[in-house]
Amino acid sequence: MIPMHVIARIRSDFPTKFGIPRQSGLVEALRATVVFEPQYRNPDALRGLEEFSHIWLIWQFSQAVRETWSPTVRPPRLGGNARVGVFATRSPFRPNPIGLSCVKLEAIEKDPKLGHVLVVSGADLMDGTPILDVKPYLPYADAHPEALGGFTGNVGGKVLQVECPPELIDKVPPDKREALLGVLSRDPRPSYQQDRSRVYGMSFAGLEVGFSVDGERLIVRSVERNP
Image (cartoon, rainbow, N blue to C red; front, side, top):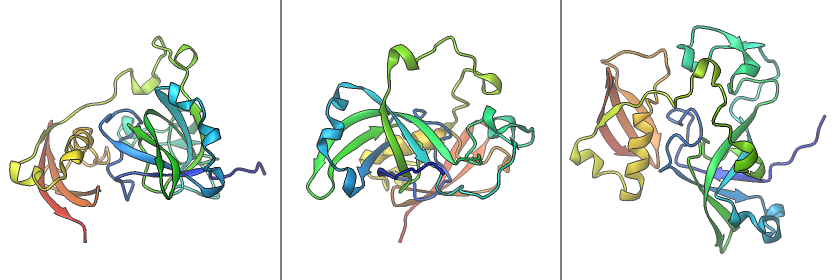
């Protein structure tokens, strides 16, 4: 066994997996906070990090830990039907449930109770996700514009037109509206769900958001505060 330590946990607006963007950076308006565990709240460990615009988060798929694994998986990009090798995907169901996300470092702030925390944007992590490491993003080494995207292509996926009545968007805190609309535009539904009459429910930032999808249009049906 290789010893690993949880150094931090993320605080995000997603209490469940449903609705989380399928990759990091797709919804830049999303804000989250990396809170270090008490034994790692030494400000010296962050010295110099403020000079970087982006960072890598290495984390655990804590809701996908299994004792067994499969050599093939069904990626959503292929409709959930075709199988490809697990190492050709970013599926959470892997021999080691480890995730990798590139996020923008918005700020390093000092919280009176939590010590120094990292405010990031574009994170694709559920609230409470264990963070195993933080590393700086290096543009000269980490960016490869000529890279091939395999079966995913070189685009970020389709974007839906979101329609939200004024009386519903008014129920969303102003600082969360852009992020919510961005998440909805990325089509939170499982790829195999195409029922136009179905109303889906998504938890986000203390709200329960109901929506349906008709072709390229996503219509918000309800916004209620979670009890």
